[in-house]
Amino acid sequence: MSERRYKLQKGDQVVMHTCMEHDHPDNFGKIWTCRSDEFQHKGHDYGSIFLEGFSGSFSTEFLQKVDVTALVDSLQQQVAQLQEMSKLHTSGAKQLVQDLHTLRVDRDELRKALEESRDAIVDALSVADMEKRDMTLESWASLADQKNRIVRALGRE
Image (cartoon, rainbow, N blue to C red):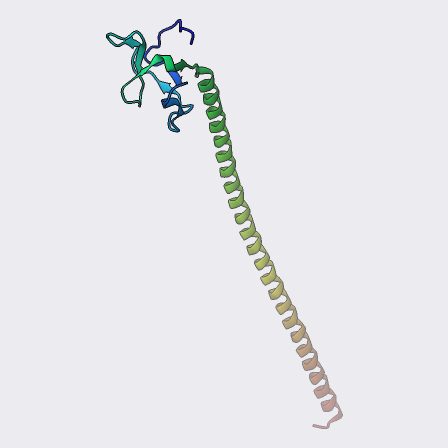
């Protein structure tokens, strides 16, 4: 394996490779954050480091530094886009609710206007029927009055 030309530092992000721990399902492909700078144990010629969430030190020989800044930037942009879309969906949903409310109010006003129109038509028809009836009664009364005059005129009473 080729010798690394850099030392790992606290905050660096790394992945495990070619070791027993790498093959464990909880560790495979996991990005680890260094919680210490690289160091050498007394009497050893290999580098070690402490990783956040990992018990004990770990040999740097089996770690590869990864640059996730581009990935983080991309994810932050996606989060911002999703938040903007969420705002648009929320405002759109609010507008739909307002429009639905307006439509319901308009519907209720139309129903009321139709009921009032129907009542006015019924009232007008009732008045027309009464006037028609009154005219008929007046006609009969007028005919009865004429009959009485004729009978008196003929002297039959």
